[in-house]
Image (cartoon, rainbow, N blue to C red; front, side):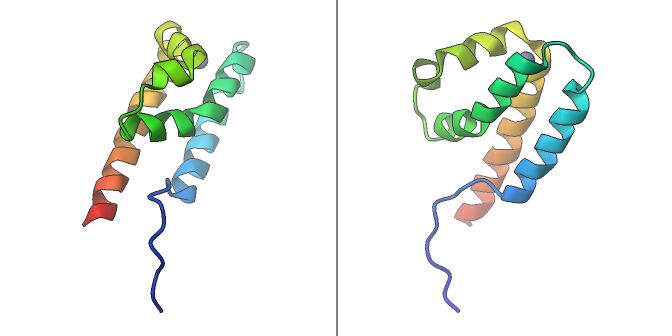
Length: 92
Ligand SMILES: [Zn+2]
């Protein structure tokens, strides 16, 4: 079977893992609402960023939140690395 050339979309399993992780981190915190909004957009954010887009322009709130929330920033950095390495692997 030939595999059609798909867009290098982020592995669903990876997202599921991250969502689980995120939920367990933020389940007990009050800022859950803001942070959960952040995580809804984060996949797009990371994707666009790796495409070289000006993400702060597309999602100013997210850029702002990243500067304000160390927890989200940490997850964002981790996610960026994971997605980056997945894309690199796809190219091979
Ligand atoms: Zn946050």
